[in-house]
Image (cartoon, rainbow, N blue to C red; front, side, top):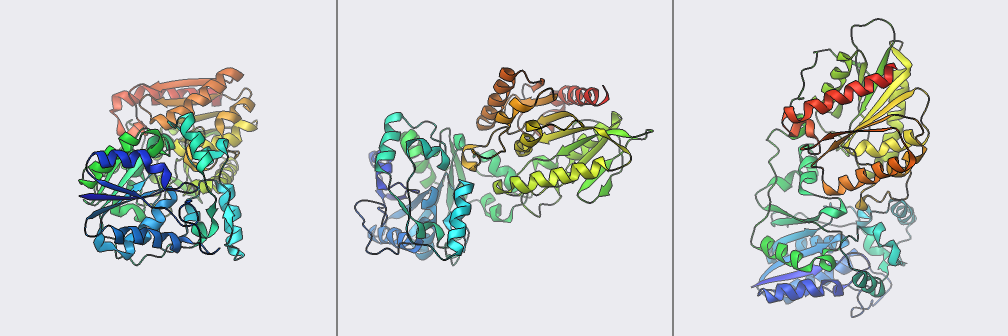
Length: 501
């Protein structure tokens, strides 16, 4: 018999697992939700010093109580930290670790690193540096749960109950580093991803393809994945679906990622024939200059992300970016690619500064008509359009975007930041905007595009939509060339028209 030992996330106790546990039991398994010291009503704190190690001890005790049966550890949100700590102490007892809509904690890194609210994360980090690690973090009010993850699918009654039973989170559990010896590295794993919270199997595959070394193990035969089309609390929004995924995970089922040796999508050839112009490297930028007289208008292509630091080849050398730049040169414009430092969702501030600096470098080039520049954004860099939409400079003649993310995803902790194009569009005035929209976009990204287009329509923005009806996110290298070429040709001509009119 399989025994599921489940550990809840911040502010939530064993009560959140009630319906999921009942379904697991009905299927013939045992299910135990671990009461965490200082969080659950039934596990009061013996002292004020409650840290991550306290909760690891709680999980180890649950493992020891399960005798010799097969154990599957399930960690949701913060709960993955004590789960991994316990698996490290009892590796021979654990048959599988399930990561339920959470990150991949690393040795020596506290759970604070996974707190989605970036402003709060910074405040707590400063407090930790001062050595002030005692006390509690107050739970969110009913309207504040979205700061911790998408509540999509959670009923009003369930949200009321979640709020009523929420408990303060001991700060030491977030600030104390996770200590792992590596003894559990061979334990099989399963990731259960909640797509309406912004994470999907496709996104994880892309990150693996970028060469992030921390994700390399996810391509092994003992790592599987499931998706649930819901928000961050599937035990409340779809307990039956979650129970089914857990049972299948225990049986070794699930999607497996493509090995890193296969050619990743972002390195496949560009779908259009473009001139083989050489690049001219100027610091963080590459220029592709057409054979034409006089200063020329320029198009600056801003790659998406986050892209892991050290990813090789660097984004400005990807076939898609090089292809776009050469396509612009074929239309008589100077095509520009650049590398910026969007390596993590916390990096938007410095990525924005990198793009601004690169644009100024390009405008200072004597071959560039400094008064005729377009910016073209991709995927995750779509949030960077907000600054240019809020106060468009006169020299910015057009803003284009391909399959962009146009509002922060629920688990990014950027809701209150300035990087919110769906809000910034109301300030764009007469700036022409060319948007390439993928018909088969991931639902969580498509929702941000819909919010943007609705806001653009309401404020009368100059928005041109170019649809790729059967296109996926990253359609240039994922989809058949005949599906994408018409849209690319249309888009580059529209941008050229705005730059030369």
